[in-house]
Image (cartoon, rainbow, N blue to C red; front, side):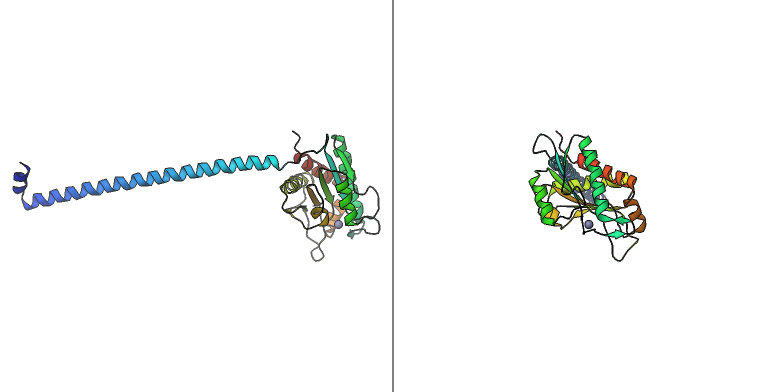
Length: 252
Ligand SMILES: [Zn+2]
């Protein structure tokens, strides 16, 4: 029957039949391509979802273990006020770095002790200590973390201002501590945010516990020097550092 029918087709009918056949083939190819794209897109979505889950798991794990745990019954916090004695640090008018550093640390001590933490200071009065003496005092105290306080200074830009937090290179707990202190410090004082970065200082490199060096402001900036020498600004600074420390503790 079919063969007979074919023989009876006019050239025009044959052409039309060929055209229809081509059209059907094209439609089939189009459907196959669309299916492939859909499968491809599905795989891509799965990969993205999986990557995001892994990222979240890693994030949770890292934030958990980046907190500082107490070695003893209570947290021991070492505070290291910069300079002392003949070593005044930087000055700007009435503002003297060694006094500012000590005042902030003394206020911080009272705040932390009121929360039940044990605090040790590398110096409690106007005495001069070498870098090595500071490091061994901190290491021998068995402290769980150390916070060193200095003031910043720019020789060539008196307009520069803001707080900067430095951490022990390559130590995640130190980095988290610096990050938390920096955030709380900015929140409490309203200082410009100079960020947190790895710092190459003896007090960070040679101490055996997570350690940070905080510079709440620039003494080279006249306005900021006046703030740093002000009692209530020092209170806000100490409060910011205290909140940042407490946020970094693994309190179970
Ligand atoms: Zn200093």
